[in-house]
Image (cartoon, rainbow, N blue to C red; front, side):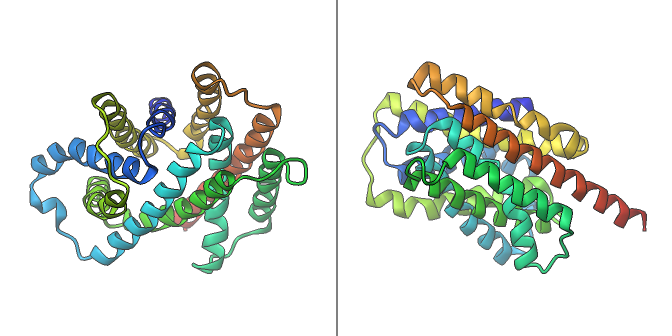
Length: 279
């Protein structure tokens, strides 16, 4: 989990560097392309049997939502202070609760609703509406968290019957050609130096995803998810040293509130699943 947090931090820093020369749509395409190149050996090792599934429509839906999340996240990171972007990204599990209640008609108890409400208070502390202008980048980060929540629910349903390797491979197999078309509109060949940064985005993003998934599969998520909070101080340090962005105390306070509420919700969810399995 710590390795995943570090790689995600490197990825968003590389996105900020690449954006100085390359359009966000091209960055998204290269993230998927280089990620697919990394996944290629896994696909060849397992053979085409890995692609055998009867849930192709769900995979396409997951990729569509995932691409929307990626586009809004990447563009939001470009236009938002990095520490603020990471802190706001912690709202994803809060959106999972809302989507599960509205779309899946799940019965959400009052404690989780209260935690969700308090979590969004943390969001207001970061954004400070009425005291500072809420930028389009802020809105994009929150929108990407919503799309990530929807994608998370779809993946959770897929993982009941589908192996992790298949889910990741299909994501990149579908995302790469689809993301190429909007990238083509703004296409310009990046410099050799920039290609290295784009490759870094694809490789770090892919391995971070794998490491996160692997860590969750090894132990209970509530025991390791606090380590994910390390993304915030890691990002704050990199943002300050390399991009001269000084994160505010409000960013850390709001991010901490959001994260603690997320941790509480995850803990309640784990207890709920244990009770169901016990019954």
